Image (cartoon, rainbow, N blue to C red; front, top):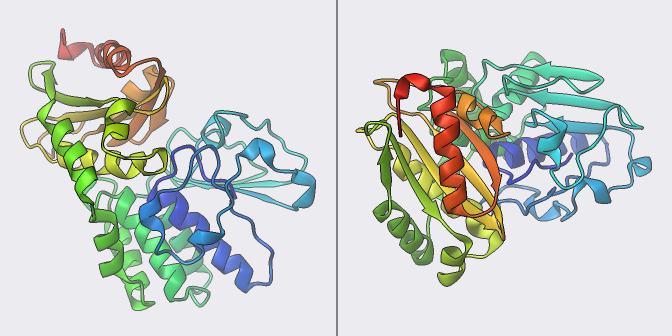
Length: 319
């Protein structure tokens, strides 16, 4: 299994849960970090320390019998550095919940109505009797579900989502540790968050709020590349909670000249499909949470985002 670019808790939690399940069946399983390091805040999950720091292009597929692609809607999501070309020399099984998944595997289990890849896995295991799910596995899956559903706040959450979460709790999922770890922050991260929230801008008649964080800012506060994703998520949670707007965007530089535009639409007054904007930027995602990529500076990414948003939603008018 290979974590997708800038792996999130759903990706990592799903991969580690599957690793534990398959190892319990006597299989030898390797999880690699992919293009980017996994989020350090997920270090409490069982098996986190076994994730190998490799990109997909560095793996000798002849050493393996199966590639299990989780939470990855396209080959480019698996690796932007060396996108795999399918079919691979070994079979591929794709398990995902992204609505734009291209079904590039030999076997594809795609459930776009589910809140997270972890929920897809939980439902699959539930159909198998749920006996394979132990405490550590339940915690991994709960972390993925809680994070990708915005703490069970997004419109993708259904009654079935809550039922599956309840079953994971019955299996011993440590929900207090999950929520505490995914909500925790150190002082340096809080300072970057404060700066990002101070420098917000409003566009499209106050419909959209955005902020920009350059790599130099992260470095100024000692935030290394491996922790940038953690801080970005903190800013995302705070900015998307603003009840005065309908769309939020966090534009951040995670590598020199590599910028991501992370979008949310969480206001129940009016949801917009931010995946439409992300698609205009060569990215993708879900209706309420999506991201696009830009090569250049955060200022250039801001301009590209505004163009993409105006194209996706001409009814918004001028920025």
